[in-house]
Structures are given as C-alpha cells and as structure tokens.
Length: 266
Image 1 (cartoon, rainbow, N blue to C red):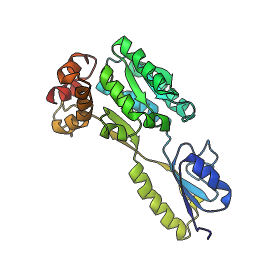
Image 2: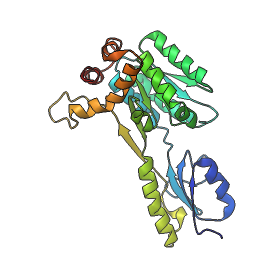
Image 3: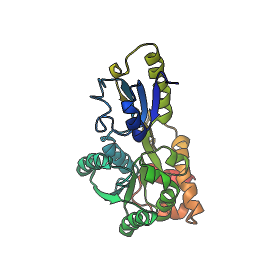
C-alpha cells in the first residue's frame, strides 16, 4: 500500500525517499540545503519540508559557553569524525571566528577511533588548562561515556552538542531540542494531510541550552541549587574516577566562580 506521506529521520533516509514522489517531512537532517532536499529554508519548494539540526553558527555559541565556565582556557579542541560528520567544518569556522574575541584558540581534533579521542584529551591535558567541544556527531555520541570519563579524569571543562551528555555526567550542553522537533513535525504532518503543500512550509532548526549560571547579581534568575544540579553529574564522574571534589577544585584554577562554587557544594 502506498503511503500518503513519509516522515524521514536522518539525512541518508531522506535522500533515499526523495525520488519516491511522496510528500516528505524530515527530521534530524544535517544540512537540507547542502544535501539538495530544499531550495531554501524559508521556501523549501517541491514536496518536502522539515527540521534540521545543523546550524553552523552554534560553533561560536559552544565556545562562548565554555569560556563562561572556564574563562582562562587558552586552547579548545573540537572533537569530530570526518567520516560521520562531513559538516563539522561549518562548526569549526564558526568557533574560530569567535575565538579571538573570547581570547582562545580552537584546535581541530579529527577522531576515527577511541585512541584518537584519548590523544586529543592528552594534548589538552598536557597544557594543564585546555577545553573540549564535542559536536553532535554519531561517532562522538557513540563514544560519549569515554569522552565524559576522560574529561573528568583530566579535569578538562567540556561542552557538548547533544543534551544526553549532561544526563550521563557531562558538564554542559547546547543542542537541538529533539523532543520539540518531533512534536513540531507532527503539526507539519497534520497540515500536509489536510492539503497544505510541504514545500510551502518553512524548514526549521530548534536549539536549547543546558548550562551553569552563577547568581552573582541581584535579579539573577537561576537559584544556586539549580546550577549546582547541572554540574552535579560532572562532580559524580570525578568522584568515580577517584579524584574527589577537593582534588577537582584544586586542579581547576581556570574554572569560573560558578563552576568552582558548584564543585565546592557537591
């Protein structure tokens, strides 16, 4: 039976469905413009629309969030796998553009194996004050536990492009809101089945932030226990590695007052 509409998840799946002559609502596609799925984000054209998780300018946002937590970090490694994340160059350029203003340097760290990831961490750890950015890449996500453990072991502040890293003990993340994307995609499906042409609906991106915040001024919104909770996962990972909170504080002189205060409260 021929379906009335297809909801496609990921870029490869959408590419397969493009020539089937069916209305398509895509989700979690990396770059619909580069992939040739849409004519523009504002007016996709054809019989397809949906939601992208790619926004190259977020690279600068990751770097800014990392510097908020660790203001003195001089060099930050951008972790990615060239095979699974050919789009990583956009994130890198965005982070590099923001780096001079933030007083830091971005270092590309292409990784194709667990050994490569360990080498990237070793390089920053030898400097004693490096940082890490892990982009939303299936390879990086597949090695998430290793990356979180290495960040805790070496006491390196790290920001991730997938929110799941925080729930597993990572320090902070700024990522696409996958739940919201699927909820909004359901609305696009409903309208398409009611006769609205998919190509006339805007393609969208959706981002959210999970980050610590230091209430240093009157009127700050987040209470101390809330940002302590955000950093609690990272503290637990450090304790599991045998370092303890005290050792983590002693080794994190480059961390901001927000991060050090949260560690002290753990």
